[in-house]
Image (cartoon, rainbow, N blue to C red; front, side):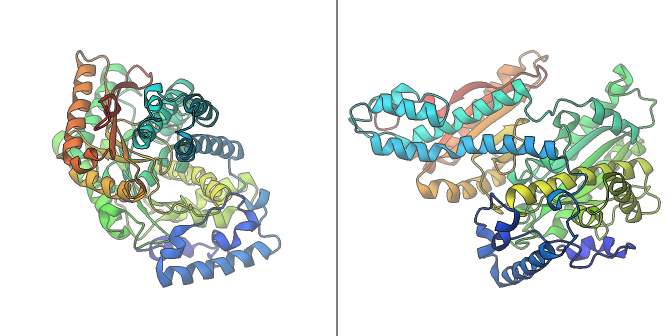
Length: 540
Ligand SMILES: [Zn+2]
């Protein structure tokens, strides 16, 4: 079910979606029209003959659409409901963080060329301060004149320092406004839900799903990614129980007599540019399989609650698909009994096309109509309101990708800057910054770790750079001994990783930063160790 068949639902509307009304995103060939920051798109060149033909067709249509007078009624062809200020703020954040990581290699290249000069240390520090914003550790520079600058260690150190600074900024300054949860909490309860619990795939291309794709305050959403969207049913039931108990005991987030439900959502993903290669790795890039597996898991969760607590009516389910090239979502709206049809969905990119020439008020009303028209007749009104909001929010992200990334991300595939292993990582809200392996032990996450090794084998090791891994465990500060247990977990995982990837570790191609965080305190991360603390192999 690639594209057409699933999103066919909307073609039955009174306003049929003709190929011309669904304006395709420009490819690199049309980039000069409205894509100032367009970068080469490697996937388009390697996607095979079918994809190239399709892209060519899309390009012709995009050019025709650009030339058609009166087509782009909104500002610069953007949707009237697009949040321009929000887009600008999100772009500044994405640029700032990714640029900080991407400056590291050019700086190290310069240092490498300078390392035998007489004033190397001073010169290196002034370059680092100017380009990276921080000093390098003196001991890593001091002996460069007699041996060689250990660029692998220095690279890992810079990645970890950049990560640490990013995380500190995130927790201290809330750059995405994710803790402003009051308005959304109220809206969610008005829609009939007291908790939104979302599992996106753990793929780094979905790490921005909450803050960017859905435009929700991350503080108001429980995000729990799993490879392939296959969340742990027991863990979710336990979270559900915790939330329900909170309602009974404390009236948080609302009292138990309020007729609201716990909403569990899964986001599966697919690639419109290269559907057979850049879809979900956990499901062999088969989006039908990805959607079905996510739906099965949702139904298993509901059944578990029903079987164990005879109150299945207290949970609601939602299935969302994400095109990782355009960030457009499609939502499979459940009927009154929480059944979802994988062949029926509301597709935000089509809603965008249909409503973008309207005035904002009319566009908002039309979005709601379209959602209703393509949902089952028995769908819950509160669910329809929520889905309409998610679709509306996603319109801003569709325009974000069009404006900032030329319609499709240049990095259709993996381009993560480091690997995140363990539990936590609330601060990672950016696409393709981090490859995640959520796990407690190396054994249970072995498959995800091996995928990560393969990805970074291509991204880093093939260029002689080490794989930087942040090992992370969050803990509840109110629980006696929890911090020490989290730190112990970090150290255990560190040793297991070094062992599993000993061939890389021996060559200095694997480095780890050990981090814990008190998730109750709302404070930042705490570094509890690093493979860089150990003496250099060979040299010293
Ligand atoms: Zn996936």
